[in-house]
Length: 363
Image (tube, rainbow, N blue to C red; front, side, top):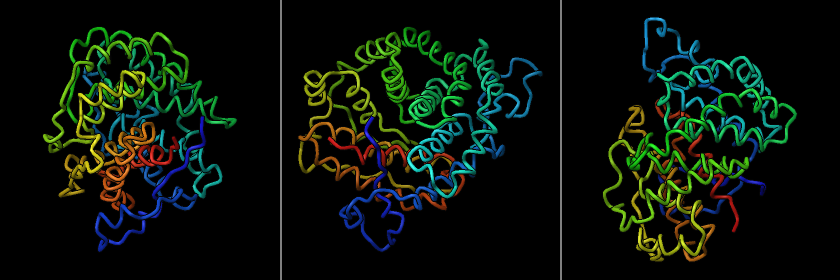
């Protein structure tokens, strides 16, 4: 795997008087350990913060009325299960790239306390119950596999232990995908957690990287079934008020993964022909109140749009102009990230890191 660098550290110091165009024209910079230490404070603050917490579980009986940490001894912080999952992914990703960062010891201590074999077994037992078979489907599932993928790619003496401790839960989630996807006859195209394209993209990455051929082939077959005939995606309808995922661009991200270039490019031309225009523009998602947990979703939309645009621009030179569109989305939301309210701070760092990683990829 190529060494990945995070770009846009300079955006942290962008003055509010600069226009978006001026910000977007700034040269990209690799993220230093100092800046990574700023980003890592977001998951450090939330992964062991038990409240507020949104459980999302189905109560089968009074016995299920427990503290969140009793159900989820690893993923009990960051407001909800899936945000805790990608909070841990953020910790691992930043530690992997900057092992000597200032907050490294604090982050490692959190991993040691929580990513234990006993806790992994308990998380797996929760997901194994029939009453919980739709819990975190498929958004949280996808982030769990992404966390596992990152741990398995991390060349660190403790990483293999952490990955092994999570493996019982990973095995349950993989099996859930195998059972669910044949039953999902129609894709979910919304801009929030249940978006099918998002749920399949990280899972496909995991299947490819870990050699799970059966899961990979199933995802590819279902993606083609769901999306191959799509044309003229109405991106002018975006965003909806609470979107943090672009239904159009997330679908492109998935199809770029599952189709070879000679199939993907004609599909893309039919799906969003306007992207080929060198002057293509896309207005950023605007946030009116970053203390509102739903309205701040639009910052996440800007980051997820950016990572899909960066990925497309990197892979296909004829779409290189889309990097500037991604830059504009980053320029709007990234300066607000550090010091943000908990409504956004408990999860947006992960989205920013993913976008920055994609920005740094080379053709």
